Length: 354
Image 1: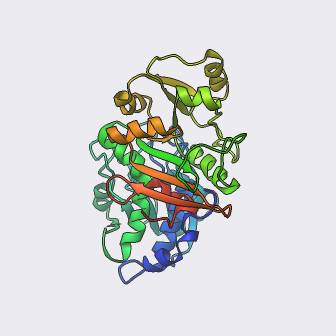
Image 2: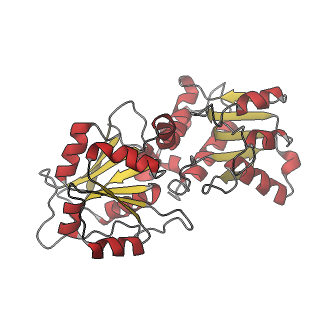
């Protein structure tokens, strides 16, 4: 996730400029999405947001991202950077992936903070999906004499808007339903089997193992089963890449009809930093995770749970990693509804289509 999200999308990047979207604004959105994506997995229950401040000539002065709940929002991060560098008086345009908030919570309203700067133009990727709580920022900025633009779903702005939607998809779903976005990760061999060869716990390449750990880092919860624990004793924590420092404990949801899980495993999981939750009814899983503040959860389990999730429609996107005979893995993504998925934030998956 440290790599620019759009590095693997040169055609999309070239397509997002046009007469109604200056190249400097497109570049600002690229920087803002990239910065926000670096913190996906650390901000729940808040959304990941990025903000770039540009001068009148389109030069980026600062890029901020929301790091985690309770810390300054992306707009404040960018403003503070500009102020510390002595550049705030040059700020003319703000590019924000999500409509600036207009309410006071643990932090003040970002719309008011922007209005207190020299910024005259504001470009917004998406309107806030929960307008009764945090919306109204665009209207407030207009009332303060700022020119406000919101990316459109068609034409030259559509590709950038789709990236902003992918960035926000888990939070937007959570805001509407109180339940998390659920991603299934399924690794199979060339025959479609999920069983690794004797003596091995996996058959995928090292690059796919790295991808799996980046995906764990990006999510707020891992879902598995008592059967998987008994068979494999998986760690399910983030190891192959650095995890987010100071993030809230990640939820480990264990689906088990009996409610019984080995005490030694539970103790070890808690020692690894997990907030362990047991689920005895698969239909209750989304609400259980929602009450824990989980916005994005990933499933790492065997075929029995995957079949139940499919039967109940309890998934939103499905990543299939197929091990090729030549040692190269192939990725496939299915989205249950629509065409937006946060999986596209990972560079390896940014260009993967259904």
